[in-house]
Length: 215
Ligand code: B16
Ligand code: MG
Image (cartoon, helix red, strand yellow):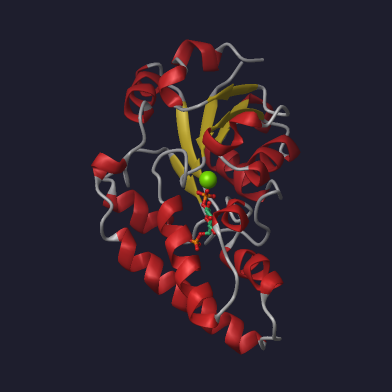
């Protein structure tokens, strides 16, 4: 039986992924490094420094550690500025109906995100007090596909991993959930991932009953 549900943030609750893309694209343009939406797909669910590592695969020169930190900070500043545009209207379709239904049924819910900007995003969409627990990029050493963030979220919910379901939009996140021995609902970009127990284009397509019946 599913007793707890752990939601990824970017791409599941709210679409900040376009702003991540714009931040990385601007950084790449400033540095004269080739970058596009296809490469950007590989950054979903991956930590900031690992994302930079993927972007730098196309670089024609070596960068020092100091330069890399400066570049990641520059991208984050662009991204943080864009985040000022986010409002509760940006919560993705089907999210609030499903979450309110689950809450009524007494299901515990958490956020499990790689993002260090999770607190500011939850505040922008006025969901900073909605979840029973939050585990994010500020709490972990190993990012998705490592299961650390989801295992921490389950611990904070006081629910065993086998009784948790993860909702993810990234391949790395689906791997992380499977590595944590949790059930996975893959949505959006990950909805083609056959490893997931359940797949949907978005959360308008699933009901609370359907999720809770998974075993
Ligand atoms: P930050 P999620 C992830 O969030 C994003 O999908 C990924 O693109 C980003 O690089 C990562 O957070 C780190 O974000 O730079 O804000 O710390 O999908 O795990 O909620
Ligand atoms: Mg995501």
